[in-house]
Amino acid sequence: MNGSELRLDADGDTSITADTDDRIDVKIAGNDRIELSTGLISIKNDGAQSQVRLYCESNNAHYVALQAPAHADFSG
Image (cartoon, rainbow, N blue to C red; front, side):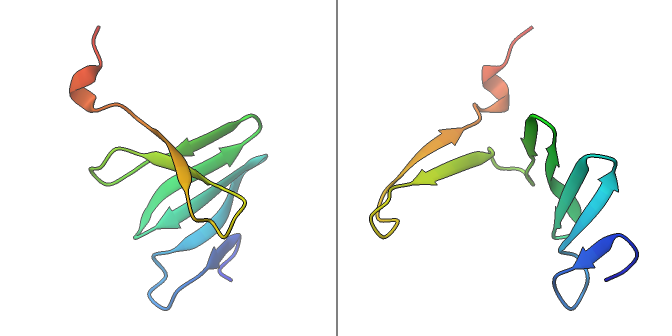
């Protein structure tokens, strides 16, 4: 534990931080990649499309994924 940061590995680049009131940040490989706040979950990445996987109830054998579209698919 380092102040409000809970370090999860030896080199300290994976941690959970109580960033501000009502917000939690999860740092992976040195960058805030998951942000949790009231009514919002932000998932960021390091060059790949972000994805959420929801697994079935039977030994997590299957999942459905919600994946962000590629950057080139956005317009305006």
